[in-house]
Length: 423
Ligand SMILES: [Zn+2]
Image (cartoon, rainbow, N blue to C red; front, side, top):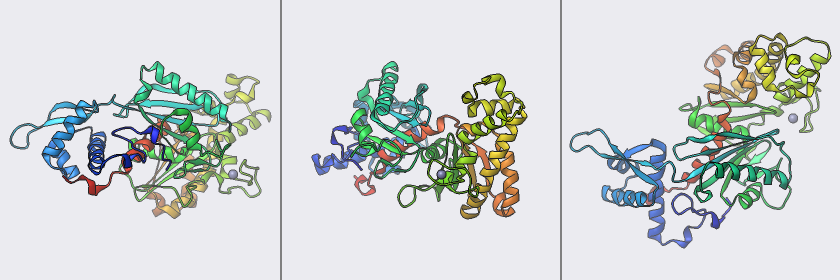
């Protein structure tokens, strides 16, 4: 964890700044944070409900709630149902007290969303069409784009609490380091972004961030063993095992895209041959379409891109499949077969209750689910397979930015010690 004291927020985030406070001050900081955590998670609560959740006394809660209201962080939300006696006053977090930014950096573009404290996106997700490059200019461009969005939304930058980032490649979230991008200086990837953003930053691999989004807001909600497969330009996977995001020993767990699926196959950018990513990713799908068209296949795709085969995108192929284009349907079935083969192995190992497919390819819905199912029927023990549902994400494009926001909130509320609550 970086100890960047200048980024402290008086109530949400002290980032190692606690030594400046008295013992009583530290206790109060955690008590207030605990109240905010429960209000954030449950939306509205009464004083007795907060007592139950935090183990604090009613007068203490009352006093702290009044302080939080004065500070603008909590607001009264009317009255609740009576359980005998007077109807209790309800309290909720003030959604506009702070904002969190979720950023998903992709190979071709970067998506940014601002969230209020009720997890609502302010002014839609915005896309910066700029390829990912491992240099300071790329960081500058992302920063400028983000600052403009925040300014255009009429939000004071001082109210931005923290920024979460999901990015491709090998990432160690504990060290805040990417081994694939933004590793051009002595500083960690997180330090590079914190310096330019002037805010605390939390980052993780894009597929794991997506899995966080799925478990907080999507189909993985309330499920304990879920594999979230992210099929964009590359292939990544976030694993929720026993209810927790699994990171592996060094934070590299889930590199599903680089298991070998074709003997002596195409060269992958990772340096190995025949990786799943070389035959089943968005990039692979686009390349297959180009090759088929060059070989004379007729398809609706050419009606859209003409001679410019470099303009073929996963989105176009998925849309053509939806319109019944045979080549697009066949290509999606082909990559699904490879995906299914890989997934068959994972199902045998992890016995998941669900596999959630996200990323651009997942928009193809049944055009990928059906062929994946067929492949699983072929390669998986029936009983294990039957326990596992294959679904496409309902969060769609939002899952990664929502996950980046979840990453921030999880980290912010993570440090509250249970013992400091009494009183
Ligand atoms: Zn590879």
